[in-house]
Length: 326
Image (cartoon, rainbow, N blue to C red):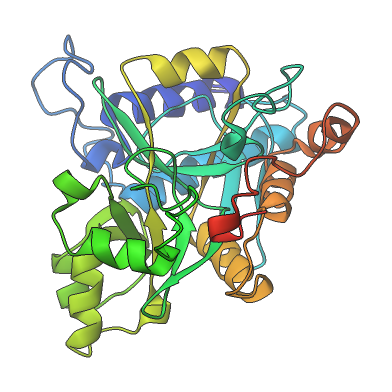
């Protein structure tokens, strides 16, 4: 009776792609559903409820999970799972703000020969539009601290040379301090801070990524700490980011370089906190446990396990002496 789950899921994913990460209540992408009637539609004489980002993603997750329970295959691109705290994650074919991409295993060498920092990485997409996609690597905590702030390797773009060998006469901390004394444009360093603060001051000076996860600049994070609105431990600080031009990421996904997933804030923040607890500040982490956990969460545990037979687990690039990234 009515639409089957596969059709409902396809409709939900199509609407999500058209309306963007905010769902029906959020901003519409240019050109999306451009032929739709301009009049207001009603269902059973009642207005449909507006869904925020959290509700819209949770709605997709419930559809995927229901289809899995009915034996409907991979619906949306893979499995779905929930946590004891009610969080969710699932495989998805959508590239959008808030999506999580996991380093793929289907290519013979993957990122093992070049760009090894992408080997089994977990990337959160901070923004995505027709012109540019920006993300940060979540599972590469470094051994570098700056005035009590622990830095994470966010990607190979705008990382200011922090994760290359420092000049002999200058320690890595001195280099980082020097870079922060000049403008971001001239230093080549961009730092992004993630947090889940709920204060009005923090939200006013931040941009939402997904429900419950916000991004802001390092300067704002420092000012919030100085004003007593937050503590340093409330932020994860990422130096550098990963970037893709128009259609570049989609092409890499089609070449099996990445797995696409969606996860809510409780899953992502739990993994970040777990890494912070497990990896001492004087050491760097390879992030492989986080990758394994999220792969299992989207039903790809078998691919994760079989990948061990093809190439070594440990990313070769994370051996830079200056940062103890190994």
